[in-house]
Image 1 (tube, rainbow, N blue to C red):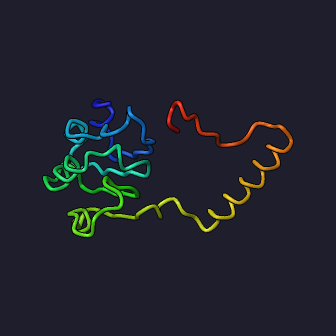
Image 2: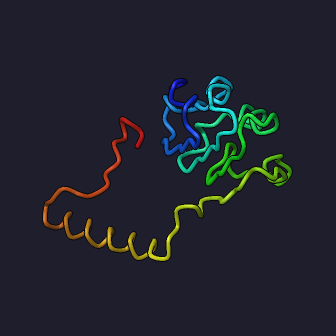
Length: 131
């Protein structure tokens, strides 16, 4: 992972929260990132070591962070991330589109139809994998 991080201008984290991903973006990961890189997390906040990310942002190692999720969640009102000019917090709004609710409704209707017809459901979660 370090070799990838060293080359990327933008690192997009879409990881789920599993035992294998908790804290994966730690001091070593942020230190391995290309100087001036931008970090985006739209996955789960549990994958971030927030103190390590703060240190990378404050030192300029990271140019910016765009966070749709945080660790901890919810982010306390006094948390330093709220005051950082190089951090954009979207609080779970980053993935919303005008048709998001309609898309979820269509999926619910389709999965209900499939269930009643004895067909395989869409978008199943593997509880053993955690996502």
